[in-house]
Length: 605
Ligand code: HAS
Ligand code: CU
Image (cartoon, rainbow, N blue to C red; front, side, top):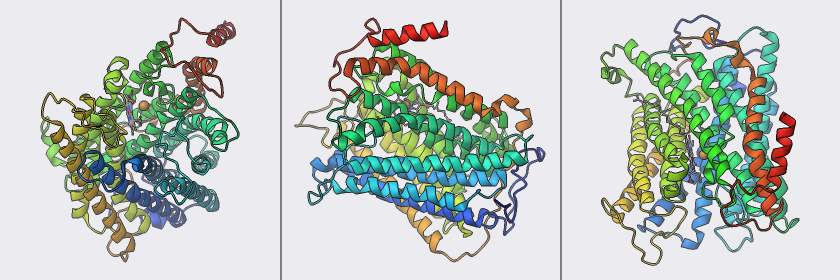
């Protein structure tokens, strides 16, 4: 390891004083000047993510026109292939490739340190690429009968849907790639810690490490699901699996994965949004609390995706619901901290009044506007999440188009729009080339907001009418859904219009990125700096940096939330199935769970 050619003293470990250090437009101080080798990996990760975005986006467009019966370019029998490709390319490849780039930027910038071994960094990136290609082959082969392979299993890939083994192998390699990426960042931090034993973990690195611990815990579920059940089953080594078990293991991972997408977006809201608002982050300690809360609470809630699974007792669902409600806290704290930081920035820029300060924000800056609009939409997406999370109301919306309405606001906007807006700042940082067109970027982020407003609002409303998700022809055989307000035709038109605007927005984004990438480096790129927070790390209790403690508590919560449900599911359906009772179960009939419960009580006593 060696030190970078030029260091960034403004970010540092937060111990360099509490003075605002707003970015200056000096040349030669962009990320690529400081960390040329790392910038190359980050660039590769970003470009991989944009390729996935382009492919996933095309499928989204086909889908939106298909299920609203506007234009059907494919046969309905391939709808699941399209849906799988749309889901996997966007929520697995686009998001994760982008976030590993951002995390590498965050760790190197804030520790002021190159990665320990750039070959290792390229290795995990290469593994992720290989995994993506392996998974993509059977998905795309689903479009043709000429190749005897398919993976029409959706991004949730639990049984009874079965994919070609290559799909599971690809996912495994991809996840191992992310594990190694995490190891890379931990390694950097440990090396830095040896040299700076008394310093607080710099906030950006703290955010990366807590997110990765959460990810390690979460991916245990999917690793067991794939390696013990789905892959052997798909290879023909075992004949049956227990579908409820693979669903539960999937959702053990499937809920926290949404925070794996969200936490990098939050990181950008905490680190970059205040800067672009013209101010400083309100509170470093509060940001640390938020990330610790996510580490603790992201995993023991997955059963809130299974409120309608008959094989899980109501009591366990109730516990998942309670935990989910606690999990609202870090997002509500984020809403407060980030908006307060934006207000601080606006007042620095001369803004006044209760709401008048909003006018003083830099609305012409696509990075700022994209992230602010993403945050605004997330407020709505968060509310529909709260509705999903209520066990009783969930019965109304589950498996309806309401749910895609919810997640297009969350992952499809809070995350995707933040990433796109962030790219307008990151791409110049890692290429040394200014953005090709700021005005087009501004139109792009606003278009995304408008398109998503149409699409997600109509999806939520359609869901309330009972229109199902994951269905190529939701009108079935001429079945009419009754709309209390408006008509189904009007909702479909809004969905198709929204989807078209989103596609247009995506094209603008990709073209802007493409031109920037191939441009000659002309003009200056902003310095790679982040202003220090108003309330810095010295105000945060030291215990917040005790990662071992939070990991231990996180694991205990997982054990408490999952031991009994898993024991009960295995008890009823068998470790390798088949079967499982397809009727509601209650805690009154515990079976093997009773034994586990008694043992636990004995151990505790
Ligand atoms: Fe969710 C289903 C509950 C958040 C993604 N969710 C999904 C699915 C996905 C998904 C993909 O309980 C579908 C999976 C599938 O295919 O079946 N979700 C929640 C809850 C939250 C939540 C309680 N979800 C997310 C996030 C996602 C995501 C984040 C992706 C990134 N979700 C559920 C449930 C289901 C579900 C059930 C199952 C439904 C079913 O029946 O199948 C919470 O984390 C939300 C908390 C958020 C808030 C909002 C805070 C507001 C903020 C904005 C600040 C404003 C700013 C801008 C910065 C409380 C932070 C200001 C701007 C100015 C101009 C001033
Ligand atoms: Cu969830």
